[in-house]
Amino acid sequence: MGISCYIHEDRSSVGTCVGCGKFICDECNTEVQRKNYCKTCISEMMTESKSKIEKLEESKNNSNPMVFMNAGGGGGAASSAASSSGSNGATVPVYTKSKVVAGVLGILLGGIGVHKFYLGRWGWGIIYLLLCWTYIPAVIGLIEGIIYLCSNEEAFAAKHDRNYFRRAA
Image (tube, rainbow, N blue to C red; front, side):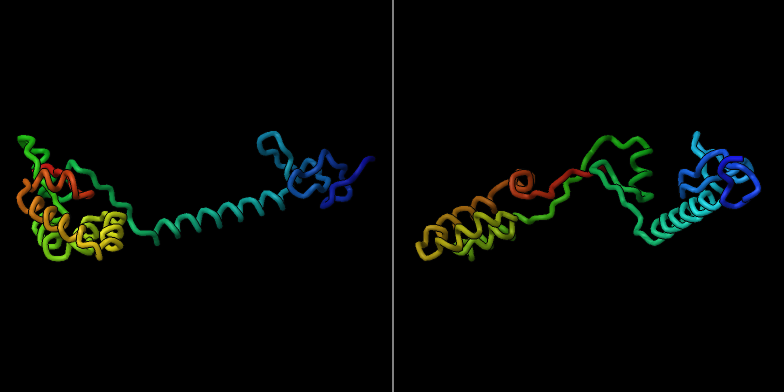
């Protein structure tokens, strides 16, 4: 008689468990993907897998839902009804920066670059701020403020508004 099973000492082993390395008999042997495991290791693997699944389900239930947005429309009833009823392809512009605010800031506070900070041009805002003692930024800010106020709303948004997009009507 050869090496005996670690559980049934009266039976000879047929192999070793891949999980724990102990010798196992035919009755204790469970083959998974051509590998031998003892029942204890299989039980531990099942418990571990269940706990991982429970953690995933718990994190799935606790997490915020994912929201997908695109420029083609939202998920509301009005927008989906409009898109499904064969809208004529008209789009509505969505602005996040106002040309009036940028123009007034450029005229009044352009010397320290406030209009550049408002438009998200932080680098230019800092340059204006550093050179404000020369009055050059004030003159440029005045000119830019007038240009902003005289420009077309859509052209202004396309050039200066980073979050500008057109939404389906």
